[in-house]
Amino acid sequence: MIAAVLYGKEQLQIESVAIPQIGKDDVLVRVRTALTCGTDVKVFRRGYHARMIVPPALFGHELAGDVVAVGSEVRGWYVGQRVVAANSAPCNECFYCRRGLENLCDDLLFNNGAYAEFMRIPSRIVEKNMYEIPANIGYQDAALIEPLACVLRGIEETGVRPGDNVAVMGLGPIGSMFVRMAKVYGARVIAIGRRQSQLDRAHRMGADELLIAEDGIDLVPRIKDLTHGRGVDVAIEAVGQPEAWQQAVRMLRRGGVVNFFGGCPTGTDIDLDTNLLHYSEITCKASFHHTPKHIRQALELVAAGEITSLEFVNRVEPLTNLLEVMRHLMSHNGHMKTAIIP
Image 1 (tube, rainbow, N blue to C red):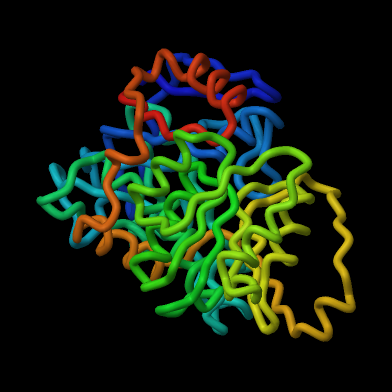
Image 2 (cartoon, rainbow, N blue to C red):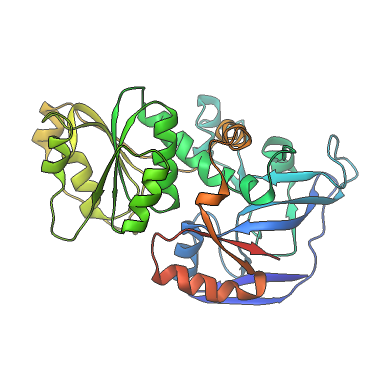
């Protein structure tokens, strides 16, 4: 088969490799759509991901496709089913899993290889985190559930409630999903982005207020103006920059919650005003990854039409163009997703 193989920093080759062999409890899926992801772009730039992928390795993790082979011990799945598989599955036995923190599982199994004609789905994911695609949605819509599940966990962990004022900083695919989901949860959303196209999309997603971010401009006074001088109940940082983390804290009202969702580069430190944190009772959260519960919730929301690929996928390219796509996304930070069709 043809597949993308990551060899190191910005070293990606499209080459012929063996179709994965499946074990008795595995499933083989023909990939119909694989979506690009900000994490994939970071991995391409850095050449690795400490927890998810060590080169040389097959690459990509947001996919939907068709079952083309099942292991001899697999039950409940058959050739021809349209399926979407998450990129991980927990053990359900460790310290963290027993406390409902499956995303922090000591033995979290990751699976990569979506940028290929075929992908092996290992038994643990088959059992715990693979789902049939509802008849009313297409492959591109179904492939959105992995990033959407991460957003749903972030919304849940942050405690967004109806009537909350929520500021979302960063309006790439993830930030845009946060805007939409915060609206689904009944919040008033202030969307903050760098480009007018991002703000226009946030408006379509339901954002109530739109603010453009510019270097050297402090948006906190504007946020206070929009919230009767108090600040927002919730600030979600979906940029991954130290300055944005610091600004997000200052946007909050007393008793507010910040979610540092955007990951900064390894080794990054930030300064926080301890006086502000203490006397304003600020809660600082961070969200990583998803759990099977959130994957299921994401699929339900996509099936209900709450999120569609029309707002997130703006290019369709063959697998042979993936290197060009990655280079483009690396130089156009925050752009939408590309659907890769093997």
